[in-house]
Length: 397
Ligand SMILES: Cc1ncc(COP(=O)(O)O)c(C=O)c1O
Image 1 (cartoon, protein in one colour):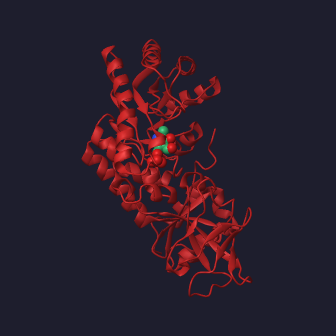
Image 2: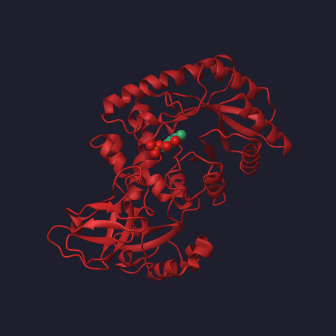
């Protein structure tokens, strides 16, 4: 059987999912020629060759720029991919949520940096529990109360938590908003015996999809001045700021040139969705392959101008426009949502489409699309070679 792992390993990782009738049918196809197109649908499909090229390219770009890379796992939510990124030298992974970290750390991914602050003693307790499990775990904070909550949680279970101060570099979403606030938060961390200040973070989500490498570089440059000023001020007061982390897929070249960050956190480069592809069209930062698709099946082909497929609003995130059919066989066909469970595809040029035909569609926005799927079907060419659980799917708390 032409698979990456033994069927027993695959089934063990899938747990109870492996017994679902639909997935059991896909599992029975593993390794067979043509099996990619016999899986149950709608299905999240990852082209492993394209994924591996994307992961290797970004790892190499970071290495050449002298930057550590801690890929953001919010994009794939899958330990199998996090472990591939770690095997290529990543310094760990980023997670947006504690629940993502809990799910992925349970499968050996990490060390994790949580890139958003949390609020409340319940969340602080979970952060401390993760730190107790892995001393490399780190958490961002942007407020004195957050520092106090995590310090208390760490004390109550006798552990230490590594903290990173989140700095607002213009997005306005989270982060300390002045040098003064950064100083106060740093002092509070330094004064707490259960906390260690390890660095600062500045993430500019507003820059990532800006068209034009020069415009992006200029905007990143402005934001990085804020981050560099915070690093300088905190170091002047004796704080060891060894980690300066941030950046995404779109800002990589600018981040590499400016050398303010010591570590980058790109996520989308692994799958490269349509929004990113269009925004970064011809430049280096966008030169990744789309490796993630949703496979759907034609369930009704009675209308003369279109066919109906079994993937609709529940199979895709819908914030980024329409999915697009990929491959020559669907040239000219246009997708439209046709309800919760259905999609409409206009008939392709010069080909008769029949009930049961398959189509793979590129997702407009990968991260929230991945979150709608329990497993990823990993393929090489037309062979299904593995099925892995999206462990952090729905892990939003
Ligand atoms: C804090 C943080 N870092 C990194 C990323 C990864 O960015 P991208 O998916 O654009 O590569 C994100 C994405 O939203 C993020 O929120």
